[in-house]
Length: 177
Image (cartoon, rainbow, N blue to C red; front, side, top):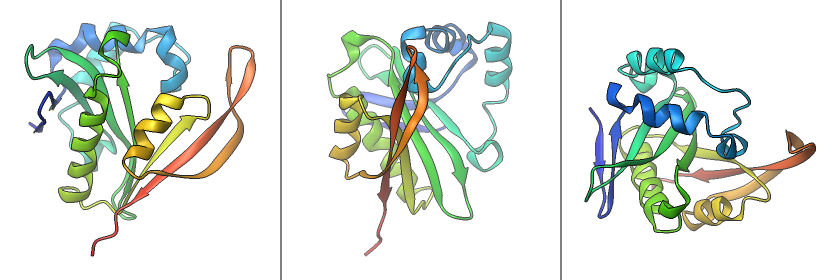
């Protein structure tokens, strides 16, 4: 089991007990825009997903971890590596903090820092990338804090709220010196 610990939060592998938490996040229409979700997920599908969560990143091509508070052990969000490409040593990274009251408290920043370190040090990745709506200033600020650079804009990429939205591609290259 992966556990990455910071000062205020830790990241851990998903457990069967996370069913209700993941169900709530995946079915929150307010989050769909940032997670590129368009339809609700059933508890049955999420239960199946959790049953296969034991697969390692090389097998599943993704890694989803719960973001938990150190003090209460409460899960407050999810952070993912996706489109894992072992040959080219890269992966996409995404993060969501479920409740607005837990946002802007440094939890996302700490979680991202832990996963970036894990990606470069343990997985030996060369680069990470993130797809962010150009209007999502909090996410842009978070990722650029860690040195992610905007390398392009995908015009009219996502259709949201009856209009097309641009999506920026951000990239962080790990140069070993």
